[in-house]
Image (cartoon, rainbow, N blue to C red):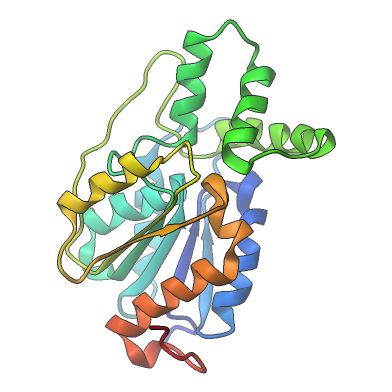
Amino acid sequence: MPNSFDVLWLSASPSLKHFNRPILRHLSKHTKVAVWEYNQTEDEASSIDQAVTLLYEYLTTCEGPLHLVGHGISGVLGLMFARKYPTYVSSLTLLGVAAQPAETWHAHYYVQRLLLAASREQVLANNVRSLFGNQPISTVKELVKALDKDLEKSPCMHSLCRIVNLPRGGVSMPLMVCGSTSDPIVAPPALHEWVGYLKKEDTLWECPTGNHFFHYFNPQEVGNQILNFWQHHQPQLLKEFTLMN
């Protein structure tokens, strides 16, 4: 039976999935999008490999390759999957993923915990400012709770005992890498390191604002860039969308 969707948005951070909603609404106006969620229980070890396996089990039930999209650790999951199972992926779009894929906000958090004489809550509050910019105190408190849950429930590779690295490099299918010039997590130098791994059909694009969650603060601008990328590689994918010059 054919799929009812062409694009699969990866969500491996249950406590932060709210920040994907604006761009999902925008993309859904032009093509069929589904969301795949990874929910890790407190009894399970944090493992990006386990998440890749579960995604594989799901995609074996789908018809044909799909366009995968992911932000942050969800993008890392998509990258690891696309390298291991390329025949299941039509294209890959990464948002806020460094050329060294393990450089997620979680890595920055654990490095700060090791270097700073500060509590878990204080370091998380510092990360809120890096990820979202200046926010009201009440919002910071809620975001601290969300980040705290993300440390426990996303397939994060890092801990206070170990900061890991992942293999660098691109993928065989068309790749789009998006970042923000105001992102201190995947700062422009870390983003530009992708250039050495891109093929001629790949795209690197920077949003001028929005910090690490630039797709939340600029859903239409980021969404249109992704739609342009898809239309270039598969025009029949989209409806009611005019290619932007």
